[in-house]
Image 1: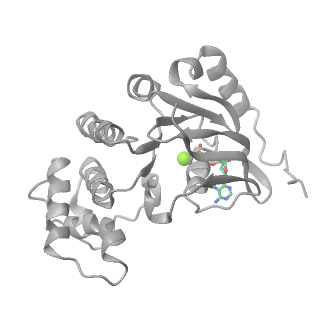
Image 2: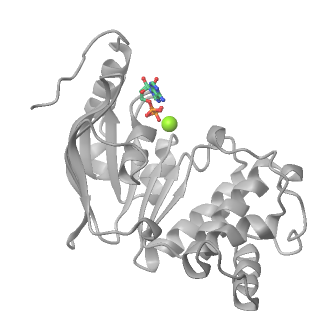
Length: 246
Ligand code: ADP
Ligand code: MG
């Protein structure tokens, strides 16, 4: 494995002092392709949000040398507002802010990049469509096009294929493979363990506690999966307040 890009050092993230991610340690190697798996409520989204700096740890830390603009993030579908009246091309162009700056001008180069990204996800000709008129699969393609334009070194995807049709899923897994081939570091929360086994060399299995992290075949064992299930079933919202070390 190459050098670590992101290190989780005893990471604990809490909501009202109840830990959703508890004492997690480990490293994402530069250029690695990792699936985050685990039961519902297991802390997967919380982990992704703390990696990108949206949530602050209650204890421990996420250590890296990255700038905010080095990280591309696709939130879980439920957290994205599709009613916003914006076109497909303008949504993709939002990915260009790293090079245009907050008040920069969108030039011909940016428009060409956005058009190329739309072509890469199979949506040429959709430029002027309002995003509200797209199917779930088409909208997910637009969000991947935006990530393509953003050109980030690290890409975090939270359940990119939940409620997405098979054809779109297949195409977008191809985009992930392309990112991986370009040496980017990709971390994706996934539900479908067959998908994880087929396309993701590394897996981080979490049920609030870290259950396993390493080569997918060694992590997704029956023992580990039943451990994850047991931990999630034994949860109690009122239990386990974590007091960080002073
Ligand atoms: P996953 O993505 O694995 O389904 P989450 O990270 O979303 O899990 O949630 C982990 C735990 O934290 C769950 O018990 C969830 O109810 C709780 N949780 C998530 N977000 C919040 C929040 N904003 N406020 C309080 N509790 C939350
Ligand atoms: Mg989640």
